Image 1 (cartoon, rainbow, N blue to C red):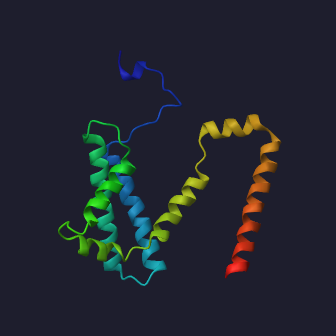
Image 2 (spheres, rainbow, N blue to C red):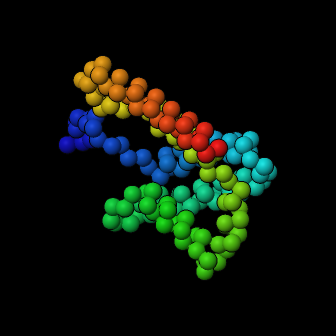
Image 3 (cartoon, rainbow, N blue to C red):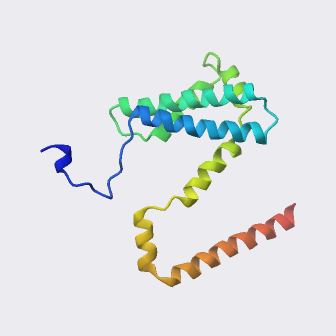
Length: 158
């Protein structure tokens, strides 16, 4: 039986290869570079260096996810590599911290959060269809309450 004989499972999580992940991470870094250069006082060279370091740390974590036999998610491996690279006794950690310090986390997180907000899976659409109009009202009230609550806290403390 070949792979073409197996029906595609819509619930299955497709796995990307290392080359695909490297290419996607390059695109994310390019977007982050533009955002970091525009939104901060960092020069282009500082931004490129910091984002390049983050790229290398991320790719090492992705490689470890593929190579290590137990199933730790890539985000955990990337975090562990980042922690190891910045430990005080790691050679060059001060330089890594200095270079990455020129990269604004919020600038990197904003496009990712925007994508997460608009990325809707087929399963979520089915849930919305079966839930009916009531879920729309609940969502509207939750979003309105969150906005009004945030505005009140900001008004009190800022």
